[in-house]
Amino acid sequence: MTQWTSVVGAQQLARLLASQRTAGHVATPGPASAPGPSGRRLPAYRALADGVRLLVLEGRVPVAARLPAERELAAALAVSRTTVAAAYEVLRADGFLASRRGAGSWTALPAGNPLPSGGLEPLPPEAAGTVIDLGWAALPAPEPWVTRAFQGALAELPPYAHTHGDYPAGLPVLRRAVADRYTARGVATMPEQIMITTGAMGAVAALRGLFAPRGERVAVEHPSYANVLQLLREAGARLVPVAMGEGLSGWDLPAWRRVLRDAAPRMAYVIADYHNPTGAQADEEQRRELVAAARAAGTVLVADETMSGLDLDPLPGGRAPRPVAAFDPGGSAVVTVGSASKSIWAGLRIGWVRAAPETIRSLVAARAYGDLGSPVLEQLAVAWMLADGGPEAGVAGGTGGTAGGGGNGWDRALAVRRERARENRDSLVAALRRELPDWEFTVPHGGLTLWVRTGGLSGSRIAEAGERVGVRVPSGPRFGVDGAFEGYVRLPFTVSGPVADEAAVRLAAAARLVAAGRSAGADAPRTFVA
Image (cartoon, rainbow, N blue to C red):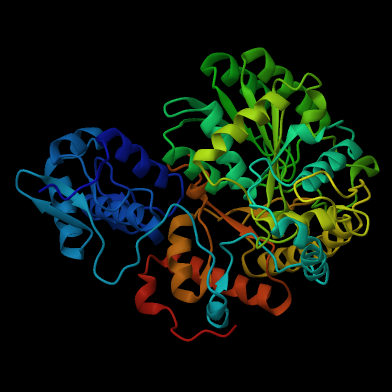
């Protein structure tokens, strides 16, 4: 019986291994022995085994994936077959490879190792006393506004409780509230242009199913939001990466025009407002030009606005750029995704899609085969926050209640969120500059993330060492295609004060372990101080 469930080709594995070479202290196989940390040279077979092991631990090569035959991989890497055979033997001895005559060799994990995933899961709250979690860009709820919103929602619930509770397009009162908020931002919107979803990920998944079936090309910023990249990969999309501009300059418009013209992707996914992970914000001229290029190419531009409103510094000219949809008056080129999860609280799993009415009808029809609808109570809570003092109770299932564009509850909750994120950002930046002065980054003016170049060290190895010293951090390749960004990590604005200081201390300890070429498991402390 075959033990492997997927296949990694020789050229694919060679590309993944080559991506590790972009970070200065990553030993990767080559025609001769490879340089290791501190000038030491590792035998080529050791470098190859180490590279494959790291890919497995990172989740970039799946467990139970069949690896190329020795001869094929040797040709792809321009090394001898003996080198590959010796590397495979090391991996088998360490428990990272299993083999059977006639079935080949496939990746495995030693007993006791957790199964890697495409992204980082948030740590349970009880782990907070031992591990600093920088893997999840989410903050605690901005109280008292979330609690007040649910109290208001409970008061509005009784009429809805007398119905079946399924609203595939979303509660009418919330659809109107979201539409009114877009109108207040300068983009005239009707409730018929809104579908409520279960978070922004639910919105992107629905749009992918409508616009980009398996095998279709999808253009993405490079780097981009890790969870969306994983969603698209698992759905069988063919990702076409487009590099971001330098620093926080936003999009590289010539590159986008070239990709849209030559690759003709069916869909493109972009984050115009405080891009995750880089923190860049596209200006109005960039938004106008990208919409025009997408319209000319026949590409549906999915604009993720989940970071919209998270301005941490004074805005140029006193106002934020207009939404991407403002540059698509016909409504044919741009579909917008929004969410309460980043702006307000990750536990409030309510998102939405703004699109042309015919697109919304198609999404609603397809939803019968998905999640049917979003929770009623959470929708009422978001509607309460978006309204002036909370929506009035109306006839269940009808359009009862007023949901004006003032958004007192939402705006006040957002102000609390911005204040905390600003404090966290400034604390983290100061701690990093003190403990890791050779790490490079540009401080963004908003959002929740800092994109950091790790001074020539492997981000994957820093993440691995960080797990041992009590700090979780996602490495750069999670946000790229085919192993790019090995020399980066993403740090969210989720800690401040002494915790931010301690996080930087632990990251510096992880960096020292990587630079010294030591196995963090033997040297890291086992007791941590929160």
